[in-house]
Amino acid sequence: MDAGGASVHDRSLEKERPVPDKETTSFMRSLCMGRIEQDVICPFPTMSDAQRETLTDISGALQGLLGTRAEDFRKWDVAGELPQEFIDELKEFGMFGLVIPEDHGGMGLGNMAYSRTLQEVAKYDASVAVTIGAHSSIGMRGLLLFGTEDQNKRYMPKLASGEMIAAYCLTEPGAGSDAAAIKTTAVKEGDHWVLTGNKLWITNGGFADFFTVFAKTPEEGGRGKMTAFIVTKDMEGVSIGPHEDKMGLRSNPTTTVLFDGVRVPDANVLGEVGHGFKVAMMILNSGRTGLGGGSVGAMKRLIELSTKQANERKTFGEPISSYGLIKKKVGQMVIDCYTSEAVVTMVGGLIDAGYKEYQVEAAISKVYATECLWKTADEALQIAGGNGYMREYPYERVVRDCRINRIFEGTNEILRLLIALTAMNDVASQLQELSSTMKDILNHPIKGFGVLSDYARKHASLRTGVGGEPGFQKIHEAIQEQAKIFEEETRYLAQATDSILRKHGKAIIGKQFASERLAEIMIDLFVMACTISRVQSSIEANGVEAAALEIDLLKTFAREAKVRIKRNFRRIDTNDDEIVKALADDAFETERFRWDTI
Image 1 (tube, rainbow, N blue to C red):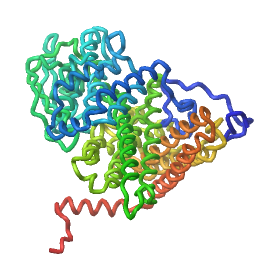
Image 2 (cartoon, rainbow, N blue to C red):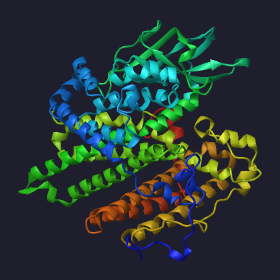
Image 3 (cartoon, helix red, strand yellow):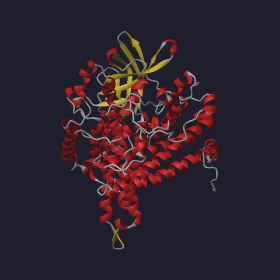
């Protein structure tokens, strides 16, 4: 045992661990191959002193700007609009320049600090957080990732100051999760592109001046690929529809945006012509920590509200905080918030550290954090009882506001398929005789979802264990048991992937129940790994005694995750999938509930 604690493995068994290649290494994709890349997630990421100081200043400023406006937020929700004077205040506070480099007038925050800022905003109001997030997470994120020197010079200072507010224009009436189905077109005419089409449900659409727009650009033979464009509101042919009357996030203006023969200069192509799908996915992946951060911030606020409510409300002479079932709800809220923050922080840390392959991890963070927030909001309203149902209190608004999180920026169902099919692609890629054509198809699982060759069906295999690779090293003895659980459950990931490939082969495209189960296993494993890393860092910084509650939290999560992983693995082969599908097919055919007794 060393000063920091004991290792899961005997020291004599340790191998010299190669430094991860940040261009190619992904923690979860490596895990699907039976390798635990501990150096990717340990130590737990932290911000620099300079960014932490900046964040402290931002937090204080936000308290002054937003902390006394609870009644305003309620009124603006009812009215369905943020007043212009408040938008101007956000601009003055620099809220639209969070991620823009300092040499273009922004704050230059890294991904972790940006995510943490949206946490703070979301504690006060989700519509405000989405207004800022839609600008920085997706609206102008393509410029940040792919912008040329000329494009950056022309637009970034205006975006940083808020003179221009950004929006992301991908969704159309017939193309949501299926981005490849967009019908907006851009046809080259001289040194311009003529853009025609309609975009739907555009966040910030009501006051945006800068649009990242995706359109089909035709190629020879009539086929078309997607290209990304920078379009500004002042271009002739751009028009904005009325504000949508929404369930939640009501004060943020969501609209249609119409492009009627808009002439877009060739200099406004974002990235390469025909590579718009890559641009769209990289924007969403890079910006997911904004949505995750907002979810964590809302959870923290709900825990504050729920604990105060439970301490103040009495029944039968006792505060309801003394009752076991209330403690159960709040305890689970804390677990969900802590683990969500661990995952969101980890993904932000990977991006800040320069890792390029974080698509799966980012998708997991979005799915997990948004679903934890949904559960937390529901339980907070339940704890508030009748008050929670009244618009006078914030609970019902939080429930309405957070429901969209599981839909936008990629539905959680589509992201689960992406997570699982990426894993199966990696397994299939191990087959030495797998055709190059199959590899090409599987490299884009979200677009085509591909199929496996008969060879893959017969011969795909993954090491059914950690495969002799070193697992977690230098983990403190207080959480060694949880590290061992992680290593043991990694076997189920390997076995589940292998089992699904062998069972379904080229029919995997239609087996979404199986893909979902694999995704659930991967989600639990990544959350467990991030939480282990976070608790390990807390032990190292504060000691075992101070980290005792965090250790217990990890133990509880690991036990519950272990049960879920085993259950999902068993149900790959033993399940009621066909019965459930038959019931659904019958309902689709009759378009009603068959057994109505009246």
